[in-house]
Every structure is written in structure tokens, then in C-alpha cells.
Amino acid sequence: MSLPALLTQHIARRPQRIALLQHVAEQGSITRAAKAAGISYKAAWDAIDELNNLAAQPLVERSTGGRGGGGARLSAEGERVLRLYQRLQALQTELLDAAEHSSDLDLLGRLMLRTSARNQLQGQVSALRREGRHDRVSLALGSGLQIEALITRGSTERLELALGVTVVALLKAGWVQLLAPGEPAEAGSNCLVAKVEQVLASEEDACEVRLALGSGQTLCAFAEADWLAAHAVQPGSELRAQFHPSYVLLGVPV
Image 1 (cartoon, one colour):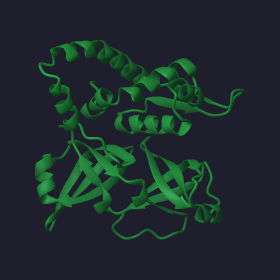
Image 2 (cartoon, helix red, strand yellow):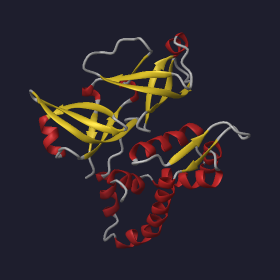
Image 3 (spheres, one colour):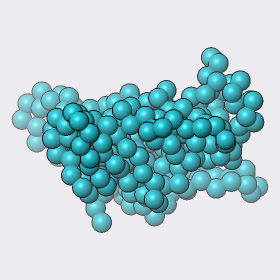
């Protein structure tokens, strides 16, 4: 099975993130891989989360415990992606030689969009429903997980959305609200059960919370330190992540 077009495009425009896979394979640890790549531990996990979310299967598997305190290794899919990256490196020189003008590569770069949204979840369109001037798009993320996006009918047509089409859902971390067990969810909102992987303190009152979804994908959210302390949130805690369908932006390969 070939790699999804979205992941292939990501490899082409963000090679330094794929190169991180090589460091993981060599070092067997995210901490050591980040050091070898010259980036922070947080930046390394951000990169790996993004790659895992765009891939059909996780590329990096993390283990906990043991004498070394746990480690990380590439999955079979991760090894395959790494081989593809190495092949792309070999083809890079040919691409540069084939460009007729120096502006050709600048044009290609402008056509490939980089987004500020922290959360990028790949899914397939499972349902399309008309709601006045808008369309409600249901996305299957895998393992029975579903989310909905509310977009204009013009956007549906422009993106050529149809059942089975693969898309990426973009969602800013600040748009995700965390709910503790027992807290009521807002009617009509997406509400996903998730397990806390990490809580990263910041210089401000809000902390970044990294959540593992049942689909194997990762979701990032922000929460006040006082709220986290009041609900004794820590790695392993189960929470719900809530966000309105109108906050979900959709993208497709060009």
C-alpha cells in the first residue's frame, strides 16, 4: 500500500522532521534522538506526533519502564517511511537539476501550505449532510472514532469532498476544551475520550496537555494549571476533549 499523499507531501517539504526518524532508529530514545538532531525534547515529540497523525499507522512506538526508563523505536511503517525518505534524498539532486529556472522551486514552495494549527488529524469522509448554507462533514479517524466539521457548501465543492475521500482536519490547540469525568459536554460539539500522555508546564498559567486518542492519533490542548491540579490530572488520567464542529478546518492534497 502506498503512503498517503498528505504524508508524502509532508516528507517533501519538511525533510528535517523525517530525518528525526533516523535518529530514533539509531538512538532508541526520543531524548537522545532530539539531542542528536539539535532540537528540544518537546520539538521532537511535536514532530513525531504530527507524523503519527498523518500516517495510516504510528511511525514511532514508545515503551515505558525498564532499566533505561523506557525508550522508542520505529514501527515497521516507520522503517518503511524512513526508506522512502532516503530514496527522496537520492532524487533531490535530480529535481534541482531539472528545474529550468531558479524561481521554479520558489513557486513549488508557495503552493505547499504550512499551517499554524497544532492538531492535524487524518480521516476519511464517512457522511455528508446539508444543513442550510452549511454542510456537516463526518470524518472517520479510525478505531470507531468520529468527528464532525461544519463548513460552507462552497468549501465542500471546492475541496471535492465525497464519501471515502481522505482529508486532514486542522484544529488549534486553543479551541480544544478539556472535560473532567462527570462534567457535561456541550450539545452538538465533538467530544472524544482521551488519555493524558504528558502535561507540559509553561511560563504562563496555561499548560499544554498531550492526549492519546483511541485511533492512535494525538491531540494537543491547553488547560489552566489550577484546573489540572483541582482534578488531579496526570499522565494516565482519562479526560474528554471537546470542540465545536465549526472550529474544524479541512484540507485535502492538491
